[in-house]
Length: 102
Image (cartoon, rainbow, N blue to C red):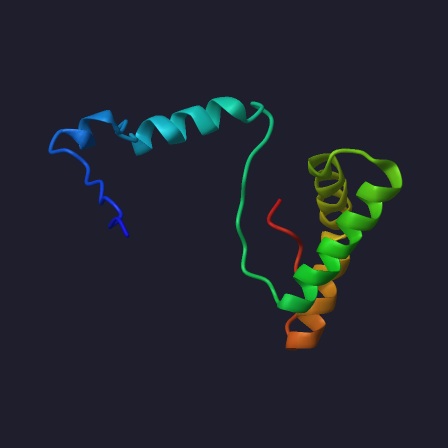
């Protein structure tokens, strides 16, 4: 039986691998995003994230609109309800209701 030959990379093999410039990757990612789009990150409860995801998926599959449009519409609807939510949270916390900072 013939022993399998072990192939080892040559000393100059690493020259064939393109260097990944993280700055270039970030620049290209920004260019590929439409100018009126952004990414944000918030920590939320798992329950809230799951409910939001389900709503996005339901609307997306019902309308076949891109998810970014669905997410934007849901966020705009939530923002429109901000005064009501602020009052509810203030009441729960035992704080006087205050007007928004906007």
